[in-house]
Amino acid sequence: MKILVTNDDGIDSVGIEALQKSLSEIAEVTVVAPRQEQSAVGHGITMQIPLRVTEYYKNGSFFGYAVDGTPADCIKMGIRNIMKETPDLVVSGINHGSNTAINIIYSGTVSGAREAAIMDVPSIAVSVTNHKPKEFSYAAEISKMLSLKIIEHGLALGTLLNVNVPDLPENKIAGILITKQGKSKWDDTYEKRTDPYGKDYYWLTGSMMEVDTELDYDQVAIKNNFVAITPIQFDLTDYETFEKLKKWNIEKRKNENPK
Amino acid sequence: MKILVTNDDGIDSVGIEALQKSLSEIAEVTVVAPRQEQSAVGHGITMQIPLRVTEYYKNGSFFGYAVDGTPADCIKMGIRNIMKETPDLVVSGINHGSNTAINIIYSGTVSGAREAAIMDVPSIAVSVTNHKPKEFSYAAEISKMLSLKIIEHGLALGTLLNVNVPDLPENKIAGILITKQGKSKWDDTYEKRTDPYGKDYYWLTGSMMEVDTELDYDQVAIKNNFVAITPIQFDLTDYETFEKLKKWNIEKRKNENPK
Image (cartoon, each protein chain N blue to C red):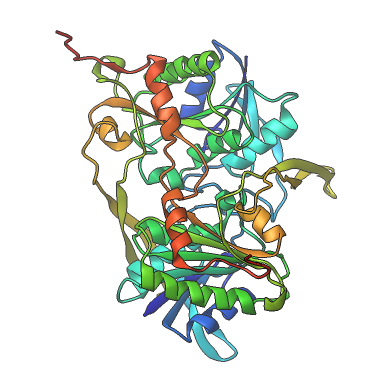
């Protein structure tokens, strides 16, 4: 089995090392990851400037390829250019910080996995729910278990699994749940500051407005110490509104010739 | 009526000027747009560095606020900081180049409108199907018409309209259709080049693999000179796979106590 690994915290992060190590027990792993942190880049890709790829070493051994782009760039580059064949699976992570509810939209980690799904390669995004996680070992185990499950059962084309793991040792984990993307959103504010030259600047800040209450939403599951596994896809069509818009009377066909 | 306008081509682009002018006929328009081009940034937001906002003038008159961030940043900044109240509508565009099928995922224009939908403000993303459009006037008319329709009918919370307009004068337009996000994707390749210092670099290139054939897909509609209006939303949960995963036997609850 061949697995391509990326992340959004950068190739030098601790999370990707834990992931690479764990998956190497079951597969041939190729790491292609951003040279620098790419958190909250969303599904950006690099088109206006060229990309560079360099070999990256950790502790004196070859670890993987560093790309000066986004996680989505890394997946395109990894599959089209670096690997000699399409991998069986892509795993993105282990992210430092959860990617649940609306954060899925902003996440670089998820977009790396989603780019794989777009390219018809099954994929997993894995995050630990703490920006400075104490524990990667259980998340690494879960990544390995799910990789094997995906190879066993297959995933529908265009689907990926977004996995969030509480930052706890295994014996404190409440269990594993299949979940949905939560509805919680950010209540954003901008903190206004003045620089040493008298000019204003703004920092984005805010807090999550928790609206979900049921355990089958990702955000609620992780709050209750469960691992949350949410299947996601990229057909954004709102089919309900599609039907409603048909009644807005805005469709027109010039050459219509009613008989 | 108050409308907030953004784009991803940058505040100095021709498309946003056409949009601002057209919408000013029906509403009080506030422009908050990226200082620089932000194409293909996906739904990135700026968190690692602070944002700056400056007043921007066109032809000697105040035009709007330039933000050194992404379209999503502009919407957050516009709503939370610049406008004194939540706008009735957000319109993002007019983009130079279509945003159909898989490109919706990568689009900065769409992410600007989507950020509004996340903030419960109805929104429209408008694009003209040519990177150097000859015609903005019909797209501007369509934006105005749809703005009024949305105010009249309302849009479900979390939904936005993604509108693509062929780069043609009105008399060459075949009509207007309500459409779905197409399934067409990019067949990417990287063009390898060598810089003057002997180092390799890569340009992303490729062509769109057209897989849709029916007129109710955005990509097919615009190819046939129709305006394509696709309602999109941001719940990415794959509900079909959600049900399937339940049968993978990976769910666990440690404290389950079956009676």
